[in-house]
Structures are given as C-alpha cells and as structure tokens.
Length: 150
Image (tube, rainbow, N blue to C red):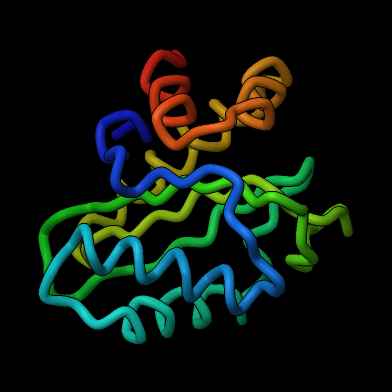
C-alpha cells in the first residue's frame, strides 16, 4: 500500500506550529482520530509513544515517520504534516525534523504496514520531492504534491 492510497486532504497539514515532540504527536493523533472516528486520540498517542520508546522514528534528513497500530478499526490512516519550524525529534542524524508522515494501521495488517513504511521511506528519499514538500504553503498544495508523486 502506498501513502497516496491512504492519505486524505483532511489528514494533510502544512506549516503547523509545534513546540515539542509530544505536542506534535498529540496534534497528529487529533487529526487521525477525527478521520478514523470512534477512537480516542489518547489511545492513538499511547500507540505512537510506545513505538517511540523502542527508538525514534526520526529517520534523518528532517523526516520522521511516527507510526502505531490500531485495535478497533480496519481502516489504515496516514497523517502528513510539515512544521513551520523544525523541532527536536531525537532523529538518528540528530537533526531537527520538519516533515512528519504518521501511519496508523490495524493490528492484523502487519505486512501491509511494513510495505507502506517502505514506500514512504522511498518516496521521501528523493531530494527533489523533499524540496517541493518544504516549499508547500497550503494543505491542498501538499496533498496534491504527494498524490502526483510516483
């Protein structure tokens, strides 16, 4: 499954103001909970924080892919956002992060989860894509860019 298959405009946010890793993760969970429905944002946050305890999902080059598993739904959800200012996210290269692609996948779809993470990492390894993402000034522009990316 590709990011383009599960990302929606209402889960895309450009130039978010964030002051900390925890506040940013809370914001991601609020967006995801609205999209999923019938799920508590704090449950989503717990899932992300549990994963972060295993090691930071900051993969380098200003990118993080926080992800977690869902227990009460069959729907996979992606949240993409950029921040106005890069924040400390304990990334593996010790650089601050300004691009966040968060993924929530049902527990019973582990193989799809890994495939989606791989496709996200591949998409965001392209330097031209990263430049374009960082230049986006609206949610629609950011969403359209990802939908058109191959």
